[in-house]
Length: 296
Image 1 (cartoon, rainbow, N blue to C red):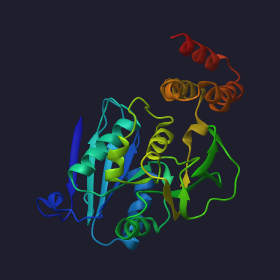
Image 2 (cartoon, one colour):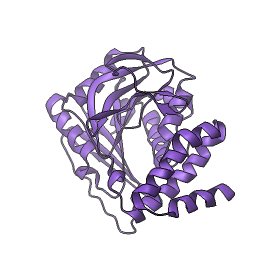
Image 3 (tube, rainbow, N blue to C red):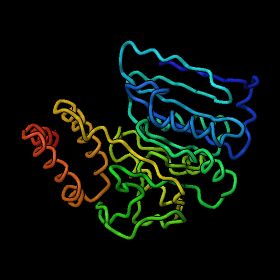
């Protein structure tokens, strides 16, 4: 494990005196250096336009290469906190370690960003104002688009996304609603009350599981006036990559379904995903993987 901190123009002991309402932006990276990923580059650009004070970023690097060296570049008024976990224990493990850091260093808010998300220029301004001015909604999320279609937040019914009226910025009831991780803004105390992310879910379903448990603590959340663009690289995976990815999905699905309606999940999610991959690659290998998991 490797941990580095770059504090540009910051006095010793700064993190013991962080102002309230401060926001920690968190990016989990994998096989990409943080200063090359879309979310960091667009966040830094946003801070350059709207930034006042300091930009605090936690980079949790899950790259599992034996030789992987990342140089922490000093940038004016930007605090880069970098942690390398070479054995890659998953998104949930990373988020929970980021929460520990945020709590121990008095951050009131955490904003999670996927490495392959492009943020609009007003991002820093919107999150900063939200942190300073709104004490009512402890959970917030942007509008996230992929291929020009909104993917988050979304209305759901029995695990299936509903085609409903367009979701617009403002306060929204959490009932039958879910969000993806990227752009999710969580009050640190709410994160703790929810119990953090489920580390048995390495990648898939971890966001929906967290939102489900958050509904026990809060009834609503804020949809921010932000439009993120998500690049789902998995859509272009090779057959070998998709097989490896599907093995992770199957393990996460098994853990996610333990406390949920297994039949509905199978019909609404599992079967559709399995058939899609089988048809795309014209192979029975995904069915074999799924059957093998069933008998384990």
